[in-house]
Image 1 (tube, helix red, strand yellow):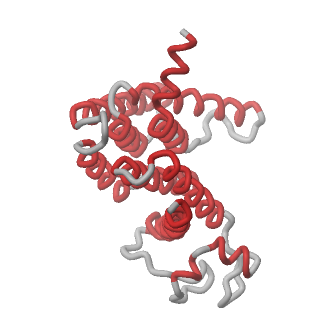
Image 2 (cartoon, rainbow, N blue to C red):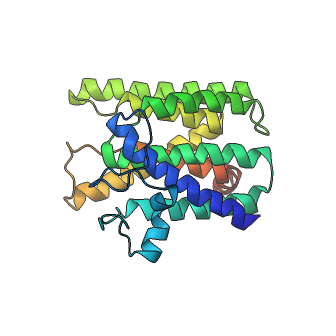
Length: 250
C-alpha cells in the first residue's frame, strides 16, 4: 500500500506541475501540453517528468525540448511525501486531509517562488476546504480553526499596512495574508503561533543571508509565501514534537 500511495503522489506531483504552469497564466483549463515550446496535446504519461528524466534524459519525446528541473523535483518530493504520510498516519481521515493540505501548500510554494503570486483561485477554495475539514480533523474543530485563521490573517494584514506606511511601498501582499489564514485554519490556535514564528524567523534569516551576500538588496522583493509554507507544513506534520521540544527548552 505504501508503494501505491507513493505512486499516487507521483501522479499528484505531475498534476501540480500542470497547475503551476497554467494557473499563473490565467488559463481556464489544465490542458496536457507537451512542453512550453510546442503546445501539443499529449498523453498523461508524457507529463510525468520523472519518467522523462529516466527514459529520455529529461526531454520531450515529441520535440526534444528539455523539461524544467522543477517538474521532476516536485514529483519526487510529492511521491516521497505521500509515502512518508502513509507510514506516519496509515489509512485514516487524517491522512486524506493532510495530503490535500500539503498538495495545496506545495502548489502555493512553487507558484510564489516562480511568479511571486499567491493566487486567490487556489487559496480561497483551499480555505473553504480546510474549514470543512476542521469538522473531521482529530483534535482540531471549527472554533480553533477559525480563530487560528483569523489571527494569522490579521497579523499579516497588519504587517502589510505598517510596511506600506513605513517603507512607502508594498512590503507584503494580501496573498501572504490569505495564505497565513489558510495555514491558521489547518493548524488551529494556538499551534498557528508556532507556524508564524518559524516562518518569520526563517524568512528573516534567509533574507539576511541574501542581503549580506549581495544576492538581494534591502529593497528587493523576497517571496514570503515560501517561508509561510515551510512553517505551516512543519507544524501541520510535526507540530506536537516541535511544541514539546520548545517547552522542554524553556
